[in-house]
Length: 125
Image (cartoon, rainbow, N blue to C red; front, side):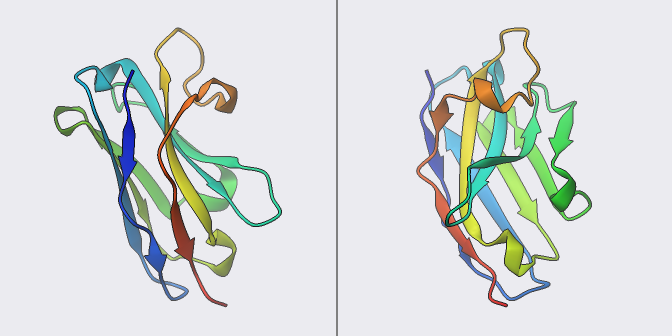
């Protein structure tokens, strides 16, 4: 299976932008759907966005629609999360995650079982 290594997060002022990346080891990256989750203090980990193996289909939770963009480059084994117009409520640890292509819905959060190390994103109020 793949292993996931994320770029660092950062401190970004409200209204600013940040791009996270996640590189997968191995040669079967296109066999995985990819997602970005986040977990804020005292809250459950939530699926923020997901992309299917081909990059054709994407999912976004309502709170980030129009502000975040997920993309992937299968030739580079990399998935990206471009975050714009960041808000204090976006403060969380962000995790990239992978799930095998198995016929189930790519945005089913329960299927993700391979995780990156996490990256803190802080947007001060």
